[in-house]
Image (cartoon, rainbow, N blue to C red; front, side, top):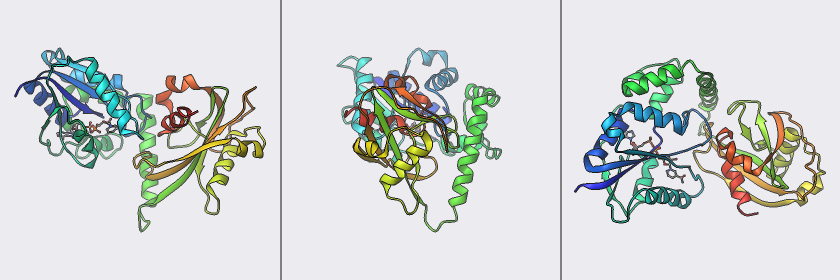
Length: 338
Ligand code: NAD
């Protein structure tokens, strides 16, 4: 049966020959295609290296002109801790560009467990497109961000994407990502001799006062130069609360007496999304510290933080894609409850 609209969800990091096959299958079955570009403005890392703008440019350049006229590209954010918020955003974006009586076909390939989201749209028909074997975005990125080029990232992407990625290798951004990739590979290698894959425990402090949140700029990898919450690994003999207070003091030098900080803890929550860190399984205990209004207390950088500063809450959204891992979502979790 022919459909009015096809919907294709993906990250397309980068857009490869398997994705091209999905677009082709979609346009054979529907008049037009809504391509939902996932992970919009998420933390930059080697899993999500290219911005929505860069990805849309790559995709459009790879498609024939006649297909492009039938294509609408719409970015959507991740909501790591709420599939319902994510589903609501997907539904809203599609509703905004379709008529009520249009028949919608969701297109995709059930690749592995990460494709579970394809089963969350009972209101639309679904078409599974077979896997184009040997084409995997993860393998393409691994080869592209390392010296080991085998089996050759360039062999599995459309010509226009190959040209973009070749030019991109000369950018400062590529060099930054390359160093991040090397760091992550080295870190994982160090732990590969452990009898079981390790689970790390960290703490984070969300200190809020007068519409500002206390953040740091990371001095170390991973995420060097990105904005983050003050926090870090828990020491072996340390309760979680102590770890949080120690990291907060070391990284920000926050000039507030300890009893006041402790007395201002308004909430705490565990953030445990399995994919939240590229280092491996990292579970963080985050604390909301709500300080009373007035002049913002003095802070300074230290330890793993190059610089500590108070950021107006509105700026979180302006700088969303300069934050480390899921820290924007941790801040959002707490400030939506204040
Ligand atoms: P992707 O770019 O890896 O894949 C896009 C589509 O192409 C998928 O259907 C995939 O199975 C298919 N595909 C991949 N390789 C193929 C090949 N060789 N041959 C044929 N088909 C192939 O994108 P993805 O990671 O699946 O995208 C899902 C997006 O939805 C992400 O941005 C994710 O973060 C988002 N999401 C968010 C939430 C949330 O925030 N709560 C929940 C679910 C999904």
